[in-house]
Image 1 (cartoon, rainbow, N blue to C red):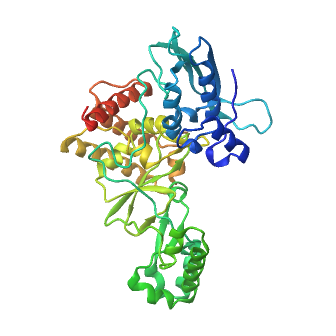
Image 2 (cartoon, rainbow, N blue to C red):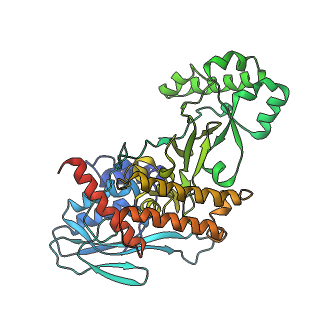
Image 3 (cartoon, rainbow, N blue to C red):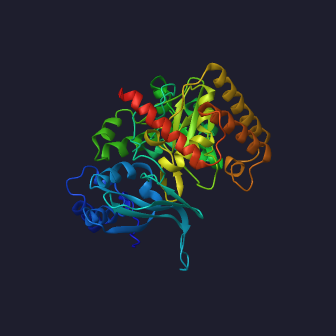
Length: 425
């Protein structure tokens, strides 16, 4: 047994990066692997073609997000599989200021060795035929990131707008000061909303200048200064794409806006919440790059994304930032399997969404951070979500799901079916 150190790809020092290069020599994309991947791959190589076994305590990131796609196929190709696993549990030691982490314990064995495979879930031991890399009973299905939604009726999800220049973003006080001195500038600002602004109710603004308004913007000294600041930042960058953006320093790098409404999904959200707080915004708001966005979508899509079924998928398939949910379009949204539903079902889902929004409105004085705190969520809002959960689950099956494990198994089965159909197998 061992306890490999956890270090994400972005925080490894040069020596650790060299370790990865040595261990995964000849394997593509190894640079995106967590440091703990070295132990699993070395262990698998050590026991292959033998009757030996090995096991490691690890952070549960090894079985989530892109780590699964990057690591586990190479372990399986060695003829090695998972013979037992303790699924996610909180762990901390007695050290002062010790931050608790979520861990798993995974055992590896050569495929030729006859063993009884076991999943340890909470205090229950489940004997199974096979354990997949997401630590579920079932086939070794790998959820690969996708550029387009697997569910054909889903609209495109886009990355929020990146400014690429701090001068285009400001506080409410900074914006108010400019408008106070130059009232004619009010049409050059829009509310900027990202994950923190949506969840915590913070207020930020941005300059959103169309080309036809550039002359007017440049005639206002504090705005002209900010535009020049952005230009200087972009010109000095070592990135050629950023240099090119210096030709239009009055604008964000991205220019995505909605005609009527947009769904905003925070890219990072607390794992304590049962649901990721999402929202609807109108055309007077700009979604920043700390969130994902779906522009001018039908309302029922919001219902699907706000459901327990989707949250189970995000929690198990998506990655994590520390312990928090990390939502991405290519892993969480584009891979999510959802069946084709009728117009009547869409209307039922829409009514469920409207009920949730109505309950939020009744508590409009509260921030989403408070509304979705598991210890503070209003009972009627919780009830509205439960009703929507049942509506969405009926889109999958007529039977009632009794656990998240059953929900996830249903999703995996549908994912495999949809991938098979897509590939024409």
